[in-house]
Image (cartoon, rainbow, N blue to C red; front, side, top):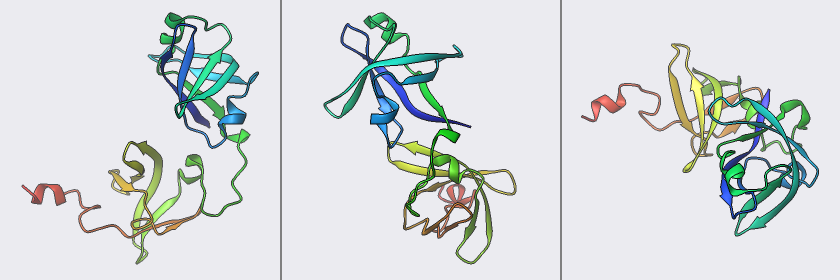
Length: 177
C-alpha cells in the first residue's frame, strides 16, 4: 500500500526549488539529501523517481531541490506531484495513541453501546482537522470528526465513537429545512 509523505504545492524561486506539503512524521529522513522519492505525477502522468539534492526549512515550509529539476518551469510542471513510500517501510508506532492512516483503514467502528456503524475507509486530512471516512453497512459514507470528544477509543482493532445527535442520520440535514 502506498503512503503519501509529501505533495508538491508550487515552485519557489527560479532555480527549481519546490514547496512541499509534508505528510510524514519524519521529514528529515524522507527528504534527506540523496533520498530517492517515488513521485506520482499529476493528471495521470505516471510515476517517476526523484533524488533529493537539498531540503531546507523556509518560514515553516519545506523547500526541496531535486536532481534534474533546475528551473521554475520544470518545478511548476511537478505541481501536485505526490511523493510516495510503501507502507512496509514504516514501523508501527510504540505509542498506543499514535496511528498511521493505513493502520486505521478497515478497522470496525461502533457506538459506545456496541451498535455497529461501519468500517474506516480512509482518514481525510482537511484544513479544519482530520475526518474518518466510514463506510456503513448500507454503503453510505459517513464523515466523523477525528477528535477525542467524538472518538474516545481508538485501537488497531476497534474504534468507538460517541457522535452528537444527527451526525450519523442521513435525514438530519433534511429536517433543518
